[in-house]
Length: 572
Image: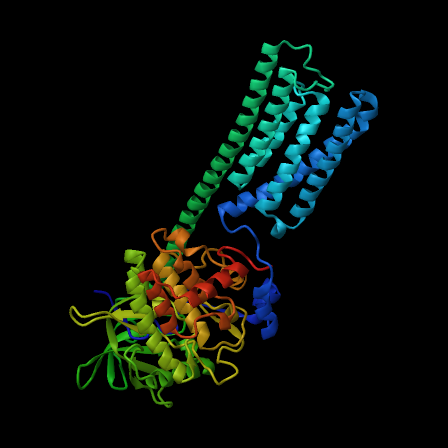
């Protein structure tokens, strides 16, 4: 069983960002210092519309309809110009002129509708298609039901058939096909005279019937091929999205493994201070290493009790802020009386030449190790994790402490014998006191980007709700098998955290109820007031997902948030 210190590697900075705000501001105004009102308003702006393969097809459909509308208006304009030169039956000419006006209105309406994608609806486009289908009958009446003009309608049928609505596209096909069959049938039977430029009066009846059937077949094939093209395109986009997601998941897991490998370097053997005594403890092997210091296995010189001892690097000791932060962590942790925060055993005196912190030595493994071995956790395990960590965060909140770097590496699972696992929060080294206006980090963005709250990524002051966001991000990681945000360098990750929603959870974890999307949308809300206000509320909502009984108020909150900013979308 792996052994890890209580409190993790001292203020470990592998995978932890401390980027000065002046550098972060180069990402854009969203990452610079901004007022709370400006930051909160950014989440209310219009999201991009492409979040799923269906959305991608919809945007393609809008562009295609616009292009076709322009083409048909141009074709109608050409048709109007040739009227004086083609002659034809007077009644047919008047019908044709009315047809051109109808085409202009119908396709002009389509151009207006498609100018704003948010106004594009299947019903409006379907109605315009019916108007255009009616107009096609007038065109056939003028040119002739057996003329090549009938083939122009097949192009329109194909364009409509690639649209989203099966009902409206089928209606357009039936409208055109029935109108042509009726006109041709009445003409063949002699019920009405064929007034077209290309008259069927000189065509033998059996030939006319063959032409009628051929046109009907072309109409049917145009519609059917359009529907099949849409289906195949959707399948291709979905396959591409799945492949892209799988690559992203592998990259995310690889990045996590690299970070853990960096943390594990030169750990497990003797260190520089092995066999030396600090306070009541004699140091053993090095069991953790971080950006500011090292952690040693240790034993009490009188009782032989085990402990984990943190101490600073020499370089860190030259900075008084690092020493103050280190000792402040000890003071904060010692004030938290809960089984879900690692226990402090001894703290160095201010006059000690080597600042150190002795803590309980935990036997077990952190959540990062668990997830590398299993990749995903069962939802009931995640609920238990959230409840236990939530109890630790609740005690920290009462003490006015915000952790600010909650992540899988800082959640340690330990158990006695075959008993249940107890989760403990480690590494309060970058925490802050909620009643202060700053921290010892001097305006830096502190935390781990993949689990960092948006307001924290902006460099703004944070409260306990930033930890609740991180806990929801950990739940996302446990349930989907990948972090909410991954890939790219630190500035890119910060930008994603502030401006985008992660991939839809149930698209990654296909065996989960869609109610999970609603719960995690609340937990990962961009604005703190939109999130769950306690970890217990998050755990209760996840329990509702597991039971298939998500409370209606939670469902409405999730729906409202996703309507404003869908999964995978970005705020502009």
